[in-house]
Amino acid sequence: MAILGDPVGQMIARELISPPPYAEEVLRGLTSRPKTLPFKLFYDHVGSALFEEITALPEYYLSRSELEILREFAGEIAETVGPGNNVVELGSGTAAKTCTLLQALARRQIRVPYFPVDISPAALAEARQRVEQQCPLTSVRPVVADFGNGFGFLRDVPGRRLVLYLGSSIGNFDPEAAIAMLRSVHEELAPGDALLLGTDLIKDASILLPAYDDAQGVTAEFNKNILRRLNRELRANFDLSLFRHLARWNPHSSRMEIYLQCKRPQSVHIRMLQLSVELAAGERIHTENSYKYTLPMVETILCRAGFALQQTWYDSRKWFALHLARA
Ligand code: SAH
Ligand code: AVI
Image: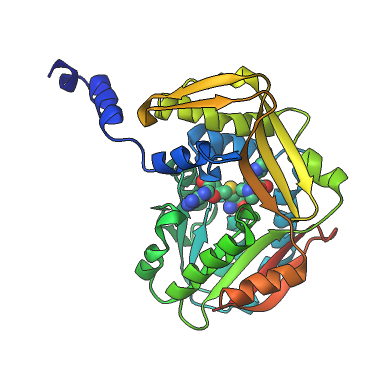
């Protein structure tokens, strides 16, 4: 009983009794071949901060390219979307680029209700603070949710809805999963509701590779943080120094592939899963894919999810695209 008396003891007791909701996925991933881990686990408070650092890296052109589109075309996008929107942003993160669009919308409607949705409470807290400071005509209602549990939260958003899914986050899903996800979003929308989707475009490997393997090693840290998180939250004993970050361009699947490669044989125990995992020298844990698209690929995905593509805007280099689609 003594352990229940103090907060740290309570925390340990809770951890021993109830594993986090993602435990089953980790168990499945680390017992499959090749080994995988779900990319959503990147985004604890440390991972969300590291992603924020990635967006400022000289090699990571994605966020800057998307911001360029928003700065150039936010007015036109707002005009095309039309008035009276409740804005829902999926995977908002810290909403660093969103204010550009919210401000343009606020010029066309009296108030802009904004619902940032994310699995990371830390990122959402920052999003709220940022939007409240920069967009006074916006009312912010953050929603903590895992998309794996569906999009039922969209039912609580009244009136006409504009759903934002920026940053090429859709690219972290395999095409069939991306279609299934967007179809689930579509099911919650009414005819005429809109989706603004950000996608990264296919380009030369000499630009893609450094974007996912930067000189300062921030992306490597972001990748390895997933193991640090498992050590802490599942009481595992991964030795991070035995892993290297690996980024590969797969032109056949049109995707960047991110791995953690084991430098030498390693036996890992994950206490909360009562699982021992053997890793051979050179063996990889696949942690992320990041798909790169052409316009026809995007059209197909949108169409199969039930959306009709209305318009696409590009940055000056045509490295990134923002698509407006209707439910
Ligand atoms: N939209 C922002 C952030 C992109 S990073 C931008 O363009 O910069 C991807 C975001 O998706 C992260 O904030 C992460 O926490 C969130 N995310 C990842 N998996 C998720 C899931 N399963 N459910 C909800 N949010 C998720
Ligand atoms: C959030 N997502 C779109 C990023 C991407 O580019 O795939 C995550 C990321 N992974 C490594 N760097 C950035």
